Length: 296
Ligand SMILES: Nc1nc2c(ncn2[C@@H]2O[C@H](COP(=O)(O)OP(=O)(O)OP(=O)(O)O)[C@@H](O)[C@H]2O)c(=O)[nH]1
Ligand SMILES: [Mg+2]
Ligand SMILES: [Zn+2]
Image (cartoon, rainbow, N blue to C red):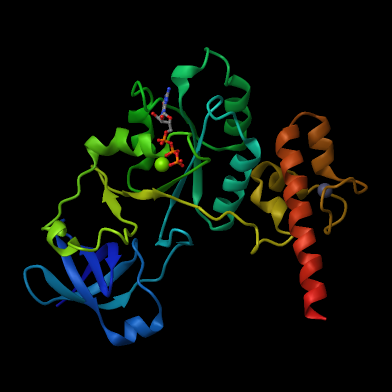
């Protein structure tokens, strides 16, 4: 009988599949499936049971998204973790994470961590700016536990990865939600023996549904696959305005009749967001130019 399950990790030639009963099966992969491409954590698969703890994967369901580095399929939530202090706020990286997530069709949320280090009101403008764009912002402290429940709510039913610069507390946040992680494992340890050096990505089940990856996402952030004309669409507040631009080819860099510039002047688009848009646009256009030269 063909059953459906979720791959939570892959080791060697095996995929570990979580069944509808929350048990873990160690599965081999049918040759024709292997030939079609690699199986990734997060994949939904059709499998046939071979024994109490073994199975064979016969098919992979189409993916809704696919992350690289780490490779995870069907991620639906990117948690962009930031701090005001220690390390200091990096809006350029935040906006880049948001753009890359938007480009992959993954809905991002912002987690402002280390709130215990801030004075009340410190982050008000920042939070306002991003909430107005439409991004959920949750304020947390992995140290005091503040906001962790709210974060968990936002992760429910999703497959999530955490992203952000070193030291913002990604691992600490994962540990803070860890008491709630409920991975029902047959006996993963015994299969893992001797393989601890090549640690692979693993998805952990959340109580109430959903998974978090035990590793930070987006270790490589680039805009390779984004074209200069698409970039504006990945800034939701710019995307909403650009329909009003006089020219369809407008890149919102000072062109005549640009609705985005009007919105910027009216304070409806944040100056730092706009600046980061221009920086990313430069980067993309440089790559596009370089690409043209290579082709010749
Ligand atoms: N005060 C305070 N310190 C925190 C908080 N969260 C994490 N830290 C501390 O910040 C430091 C870095 O935290 P990590 O969880 O290792 O950060 P990370 O984002 O995983 O860093 P990388 O693994 O290098 O990317 C540690 O010393 C934590 O104890 C917090 O909410 N408040
Ligand atoms: Mg870490
Ligand atoms: Zn424009």
